[in-house]
Amino acid sequence: MRRGRLSLSAPLKPVDSVTYMLPTVLPGWQSGNWSGYAIKKTKSNSFRSISCYWIVPRVKASKQNKYSSIWIGIDGFNNSSLIQTGTEQDIVKGKAVYYPWWEILPAPETRIPNSVSPNDLMYAKISKLSNSKWQIVLKNKTKGWTFRTIRKYTGPANTAEWIMEAPTINNNTARLADYRKMGFKKCRVNNKNPILQRSDRGVMVQKGRVVSTPSLLNKSRDGFTVTYG
Image (cartoon, rainbow, N blue to C red; front, top):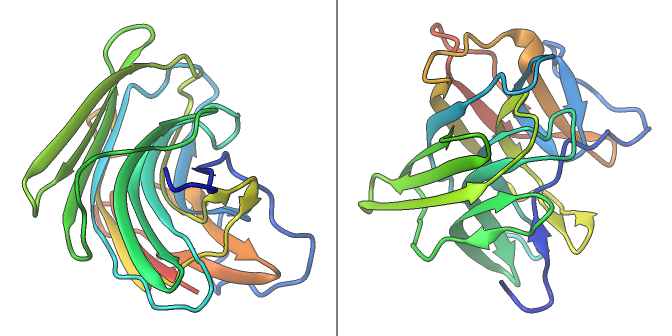
């Protein structure tokens, strides 16, 4: 963990109470820190696993510190629990920083001691092994490494997400890094196609401006792209 910085993901946060322009196709939900697709059930323990593929995007240079997190997770969409894993794409002191991580709220992120670079193909899966034991798997298919850890998690497991996030830095939602465009492919929940809906789609709004917008779904309804802006 970089000294002086506490980085973590956060549950879905409401948007600023100001006027802004929405995309032509209205989203199902809006957030100040999340964009992507999220699904929810009323019954606890509805989701036993989540997975997908993505390619690490190259973030655009900036004089200001900016941050972006790509992840899959269970919970956090309508509760304060969350188990997740993904990759970070940041600009810190003028330099691009990329690394993999996992996290279980309320603890901060734990960096995975392996490297990631722009254009690397990633695969992630989070799965329930028993009542309170969950396995987190993150693979870099390009570099050939696999990370696994088994952890205790007792959240309700009634939401599941594929998210581009502006992470929380020292208790504040960070300015989103310009990640240009990235895509989530072969999304799965409980080892099946989730058949995502338009109403599952959410945009990120910061300071009255839409800063991250997911596309409509592919034909299989198990994949989509997310674009900065």
